[in-house]
Length: 111
Length: 118
Image (tube, rainbow over all chains, first blue to last red; front, side, top):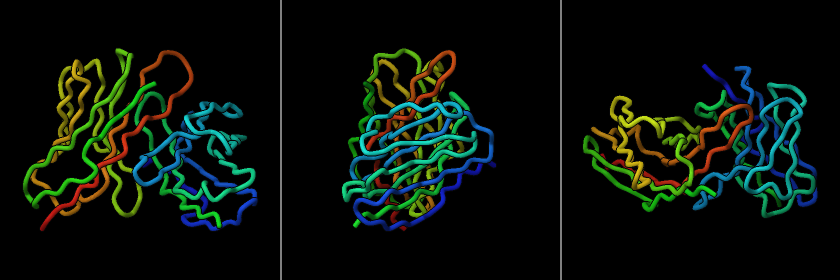
């Protein structure tokens, strides 16, 4: 079975802190994704990566950056967390063009 | 840009009955994939069913089937013999097909909350 893990299920940070969300997949997938999920808005794509050190902006990249130094790991970085970044963050991986496999999500609260 | 619309924020069905969740999408592409994902209270997104746009035959997975109408850009999910474990948020998603390298994210609808009445 494909396994996508995320470093934390719940995270509470203060405004202005630098926040790292980590995602690891164990199936040697080329592609990895970060989504944000908000009630009534569904999931929205923040960034994705199709290879090590390669990244592409999604629909809502503002306020976020990413890092992919190893194939299995994809990090989402909030350079200076703000309250409007309080959300559920979902990581996914895929072997294109097939379905994406999701991690369990990190619920981030910024106070 | 592609958009996916789920017009039913919430649906309720009696256990053992059949329910249909609606999804429409807008795209200028001719080849693409459509998906239905399920998200139970555990928050884990689970793929329910996948449809390739070039296939005319509707996809089926056990009690789950789709009605794919390409011309109408409609992709509804039918759940037969509903079970309590089917209670979840259901998301319709679109992904364009591409050739060569690279990747593409999914475009999701806003979701339908499915309630199963015992």
